Length: 175
Image 1 (cartoon, rainbow, N blue to C red):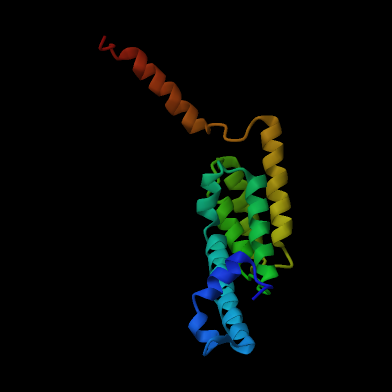
Image 2 (cartoon, rainbow, N blue to C red; image 1 turned 135 degrees about the horizontal axis):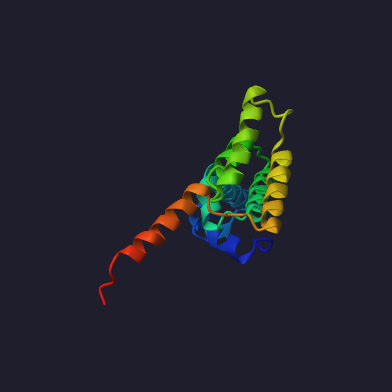
């Protein structure tokens, strides 16, 4: 019991009836409770990490499509899986899905081309690794940011803005 953290003790103490024999704690029974509780915690955490990986398309929106931050988050989730002895086989699929939800149309087109190339290869991870895709996406993002073209309005959006301005000029004000 002395080797447990405060949080660990709190999780174990609620199961006191399962490791007490009379008025004495049983070391073997206590160990069984500790292992069970840590295993449950590990399974729940693994499920949560997998859910977050499959929801990268909703995450990217919350960070204003910052590709560098997105990649760091994805790598962190994968690292958390690895520390639990787990792996993911659908990381590339989740990355493509996340990048496809980015706010910049030109970037999304770039990612679509990468996806097409990967799909044409039969989805072979030797053709495109997750790390390679993240590096390419990040490089493209940085180039666009440096050029000042990230999230530039498309030609159609510019036309709509110009037409809206013309309509606003033609419409009498209500003041």
